[in-house]
Amino acid sequence: MNDSFKVGVVGSGYVGLVTGACLASLGNTVTCVDVDEERVEGLRNGVMPIYEPSLEEMVARRYGDGSLSFATGLPEVVREADIVFIAVNTPPDDNGSADLSNVADVARAIGASLAVVERESPLVVVNKSTVPVGSGDYVSMLIREGAEDADVGYRVVSNPEFLREGSAVYDSFYPDRIVLGADSRDALDVMRDLYKPVIEQSFPTEMDPRPKTAVPFVTTDLASAEMIKYAANAFLATKISFINEVATICDLVGADVNNVAAGIGLDGRIGPRFLNAGIGWGGSCFPKDVAALRSIAREYDYEPAILDAAVTVNERQRRQVITKLQRELRTLKGKRVALLGLAFKPNTDDLREAPSLEIAKKLDALGARVVGYDPVAGKAAAATEPSLKVVFDMYEALAGAHAAVVVTEWEEVRSLDLEKAASLMEEPRLLVDGRNLFDPASAERSGLSYRGFGRRGA
Ligand code: NAD
Image (cartoon, rainbow, N blue to C red; front, side):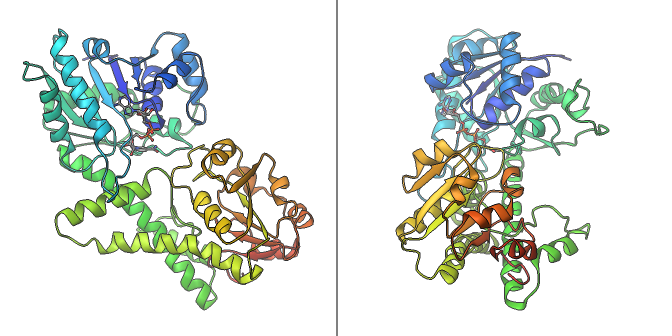
């Protein structure tokens, strides 16, 4: 049994860089590979390509002690490594299915590298990218093709990633579970050894004072592991859409969805998490993974009615922001609207499928002036959405605004001084609370006109 491994991680983004840095922290020797030369050069010089809490310090420490390095080429990594992770992006293509071209490029390159290097044991190739069912076999085929029929030894494992942006490092050390799919017992044993410190929670850390409990370790076949990832994200997205539908009905009947969510969440079968009503889900995973699962279902001539409805409700939630603004401000032309929070969720700089960008674009088309603030993603948002005027102080965004929309529940946004906001804003001082953060009555007492999603009296 091995205590430490040589690991290659191909793709140095949210998943790859975090995985690489965490595995290096657990005593392995890791090389993170990326095609983006600028990104690799930056990482060697301490420039982080993404924002993720505590990642920068961890990368600096591991790069400093030599357990983490960065490269653009694969053959050297394939020669040395026991395990190579594929952690490249799999964006949606035009019909919603996952675009596997990056995964395919890496698989072929691994095959080509295997063909030119000498190795003693089979390479364990681990797919961490989110990919449709059957991709494990596809990757295996492409590795063989890349090797041009040379006799190469490798095993393919599926190891879907469940980390959440904003707490990716924490989630890597304290996952709810580790899922591994493979047809080879040997490869599963190697992976169990690699993850042993996490499964047994035996690594030294001061990060988390909770008593440590062993992490469940699920082993299954390749196809089921791939399906677990899509099913998990589709379920979470559907749970949010469900409570959003309940919120809309609460608005109609005069109930408060926050109280309803608290009441149903105490039922152990339902659970309290992912029951926050508001402007709905976005980000780099839910929209893409739900789209991919719908597309897979349709490939097999099945209409995924629940997934379709989850998407329809989500689109309605975004539209409701505009409707609420129109109802109170009447015409949006010439009105100033502040967006509080721009990243798709707190503690990240990720703007992929962020509701803020879509809302900004729509408001701009309707003639409003949109001013946005985000503690981290401001610069990137300004570069992505030209209609958005980005400022770097939350109260500057509110100054002179007729309405403010709470888009992302950053801690700073949660602690918004409502009275100060009201004093800076113009009539009608409308606060559209897209995350249901504030108490409607205190917001009204502070001089704001409050509109939440499914909030009583709002
Ligand atoms: P990302 O866009 O942040 O990073 C991907 C990296 O891969 C980029 O640096 C890119 O340059 C690199 N890359 C692309 N093609 C390459 C190639 N041929 N060779 C080497 N490098 C290449 O992506 P991400 O958010 O880390 O997501 C990676 C995968 O993990 C996706 O399939 C995603 O669905 C999945 N996932 C993401 C998250 C998340 O929260 N971001 C969570 C779970 C799973």
